[in-house]
Image (cartoon, rainbow, N blue to C red; front, side):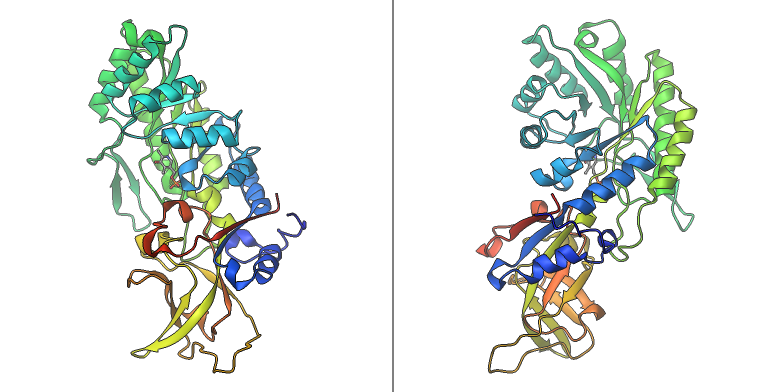
Length: 415
Ligand SMILES: *Cc1c(COP(=O)(O)O)cnc(C)c1O
């Protein structure tokens, strides 16, 4: 469906565009809740991100943030490839965007996943352990003509000045992800000592995904430290460093949707970094910051009640569809679509305290989408609510089966 009017409102800033608004207003109550995606806004946003980046920065989309096929397709023109982290994502993304380069990461790759990824001809391997090099080599031993291009995923201790000027150490902590720096040295030796591993596994450089939710200045500082460390590593071992993937994690602000990651400043900073490293290609792999803004979780108010002095609005659906506000502990931003018709003979329950907590249908106090929200002032039963920033880590990260409520609908506008 494309009525050509998806961008007349600044949907990307958490304000509902008119196409989304009209679409949701026309749905029957039984068609709610529904995820509604504005693919035109997604394409526009992704193109703007791409345009802010220098040519020698490759933009990959981390499919884990939202792997729905229409989104993957809508991103195709703006991205250089997709980052996948399982055999399931690999098969799914390959089918949705068959020609697209894939980077394959993730800890605990099984032998079957490794074989499938080799056969799928993935563009880059993010190797997470020394054993994984051997597992990969074992799969390649059965495929004599095949070579693979490898980045070593490293868990580096980087430091950045957070906004309060307190140095914030990230990475360099115990995690199941990637190699410690000393282990990376050993892997480089195995790949560059003229032995059997290096003949089939081509070392291209380093991958590091160390932080989440950093603003552009801090992301840039992290990227500079990853590149500096990688360049030293390459020099110590005498291999040509052609690529560094500095990861994803670009900040998304659920409290203030208009507060956006500064792609222009980030792109300028990366251009400076590339000037200092002429032979290098940089890669980034954001998920959330690409797709969060294009998705809406639309529902209606089923009931409003006062509990010990506070108003609660109970909506159709809940955190079993949109889990992120519960796991991160934030209030999901939302817009109310008033529905004036009230066909019932009984009084219409409404918010009268000036604010309300928006809860879902689950029998757990954790099923809260927005807490004590002033935007819910005057909210009435049967009014519709559009939760913004539901385009990433929403449906696919949620516990759908809990309580066995029906699944939401999925609607893709502007394709
Ligand atoms: C999750 C993940 C990303 C994407 O993170 P966002 O916060 O969604 O940008 C990128 N790379 C790796 C390795 C990841 O695990």
